[in-house]
Amino acid sequence: MRCLPVLPIGASPQVSPTPSGVAGSHALGTFDVLVAAGYLLGIVAIGLLVGVRHRRRRGEASEYFLAGRSLSWRTIGLALFATNISTVHLVSLAQAGFDTGLLSGNFEWMAALTLVMLGLFFAPFYVRSGIATLPDFLERRYSRVCRDWLALVSVVTAVVIHIGFALLTGGIILEAILGIPMLISLGVLCVMTGLYTVVGGLLAVVITESIQTVVLLIGAAVITAAALWQLGGTAAAPGGLDGWANLHAVLAREGAVDKLSMLRPHGDPDGMPWYAVFLGYPVLGIWYWCADQTIVQRVLGARDETHARQGPIFAGLIKILPVFLFVLPGLLAFALFRDGRLDLGALQNADGAIDSKGVYASMITGLLPAGVRGLLVAALMAALMSTVSGALNSISTLVSYDLVKRFRPEFGDRQLVRVGRTAAGLALVAAVALVPVLDRFESVFSGINQLIGHVAPPITAVFVLGVFWRGASSRGAAVTLVGGSLLGAVVFAVGKLVPGSPLDRIPGGFMMVAFWLFVVCVLLQVVASRLLPDARSARVELVWERPWTPLRLAGRSRLGDPRLLSALLLLVMALLYSVFR
Image (cartoon, rainbow, N blue to C red; front, side):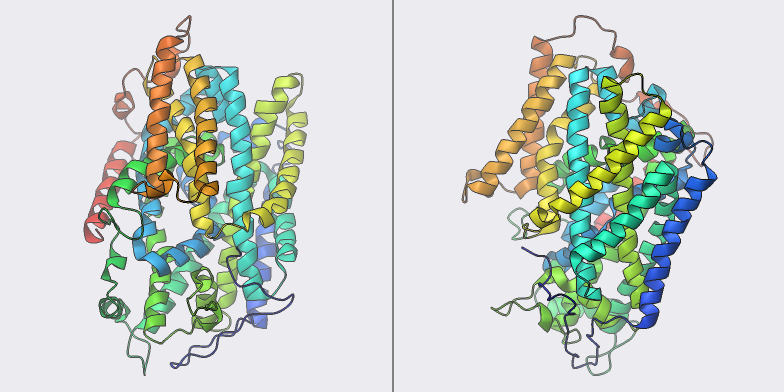
């Protein structure tokens, strides 16, 4: 199902003016187009400039794939955030905010917990191991079979989850706003993004991602502020600083005050009780933030261990913002709609229900004045381009180091870089081809998390046990990776093909399915490791001596100590949860 109403080629959906005078035209003015086009060309120029400035070293594999291991904690944090946030978040989190309130914000705030784990437990281990890819780590810790399997899964998930879904939502919303057919807009953005990504490597990616993070946050803040201002005042005279108070009043009047709650009780109709959040999310989050090449590659490019540890914690701090900048606008749109201040008539289905997937596009065109809309279009392109560029770079790294290098060990750096660039181009073509297939998901955000919920458990189990348990054997890990992945595929297929299956009645939905799959994978690896132990213990140096050993690693300075920064971040998250519980 398309995430926004299907438009005729060249047509733009129209939203009638609301009683309060909110305009609904989806046409962009000349200045808007100039802002968006100028931003697009500027980002490409910066990315290419980075590639040209490093032309003397770009043939070196370490320089191209890992930015010469020169990234600072600020760059790493911004790049982690930018790679994570895509048009999927902008569109789908606003949709979720409209439908269920702040509930889906748990995916953002719980990320702080797993980013702390990345910074304190995994990042220093990866840096000290000197690995170039995460499959490389699995081979050193376990076996070649584990490396090959993770490399294959990582490439597929990067193409489908990181690139495919990002292109889908980006193309849909740009089609809705600009009136340009999806494939044309995607073609232009893919060529532009692929150009500087292929030429400049990881350094070009992270520098452009840092810029795009700032643009994205500014654009999202503008639409949040515009919605709050519009909700202020009265329906007859909208606009004021009391938007938050009016939000509470509208939700109370509609009997929807629970939309402001992040932690829901058992049996909540939205299907994500508090225990599903705290049990299920870490399974998804550890794979995504600590064991996915697309994300962790930024950490592997750190200039030293301190920056590798501080970068994820900085990213965790930034992850506080999406609840207020991406989820809250959807809730504000709900209040504006219920209060008669935002007309969403163009999104009404035949039965009169609102197709909330188009809420974000309607807010851009219905709340923002001409000139400012171009900034939001630029922010949407920033979200799309940063995610795609990061995934392309990780794919090129995986293919070069983990697949080609195995069969052609005589390949030098320049040949590996050439292979990586070719792989990135082919991956981009494959992702575009997958867009029509992915377009069949009714909810993009739910579709992504369901896929992750069935892919992540075996990988999370193998990494956690591999880093913290000396008894985890290579054959036990191989059995868990292959067997757990096949089990996840079967469970996913049953859930999709068998309506009314017992899986549909599990409290907590796909989050608890992910948790129980993780439990099965842990038990499987423990049993298999006991039955199939390694013949020798040569790999134990790739395991922390004790689970708390990383907590003894001091920072370079007292105020910059990652342990202190992590404690402060977790304290802030606890306070936020106490306010929005």
